[in-house]
Image (tube, rainbow, N blue to C red; front, side):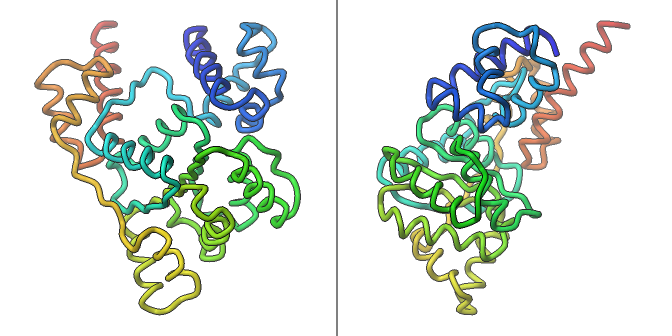
Amino acid sequence: MTNEQKKQIQEEVIRQVSLSSQVKIANKAGVSNATISQMINGKWKSIADEMWRKVKIKLKIELDWVTAPTENLKKLIDYLIEAQNQGISFAVSDEAGVGKSEAYKLYSKMNKNVIYVECKTIWNTKDYMQALVTACGLDDYGTTKKLSDRFTDYLAELENPIVIIDQIDKLKDGSMDFFIDVYNDLSNSCAFCLSGVHAFEKRIKRGVSRDKTGYKEIFSRIGKKFLHLKKITIEDVRSICNANGVTDPEEIDYIFCNSDNDLRRVKKDVQNYFIKQRVQNAS
């Protein structure tokens, strides 16, 4: 890892600490408070590259990449701001690759009192609870009940918190029901954004129609509707390309045509463009 990359990580760590606390950021990153302190203060000799990489991944720090303001990103940010200010909850259901996670990660890194978790298929309820408290920067030990109480108590202390549960469709029913419990405990004092692919909306509506336990309650608490996003446009791709140093109109057109409505494909093609440039320059 280069010093320039370490500098990027340091700057992001400093910024995240300014929105939270050094101890909480250390817990989120899964490293000691001393390590975070050394990163911030430029005492890097004793920090192994493996530790830098761990912090980068755990804190979702993007190196050498600029997030551009696509239409979907701007729309989601507007919804998140309004939800957090008003303490309301909403749900997003749309296909993979249209920029949902990118917007959530950006919003969580740029604002106070934002709890962001990206769910995994293998999680059981305790795994989910541990992920939630870790996202708060809290210790993840104890029973499922204690983790739940720790999470709810922490949210109750915050001013206008918002919890963003990304890829919630990967959770099992019991874990998904936890949203109802926290929503009830905090009334209108905490906002929630529940987000997943199209299967999330289908699952909720199917559960409602079959009168499955918890599904009507979830559907009611998100206002009985789902937010949908737009397809990627050439303007979106041009914005991403320009923000990351690609200005050739033909290359931008190629990247858009090759995108298949997937921003991950766009990112990969932008990165491949620079790889090809380096290879050509070296030959």
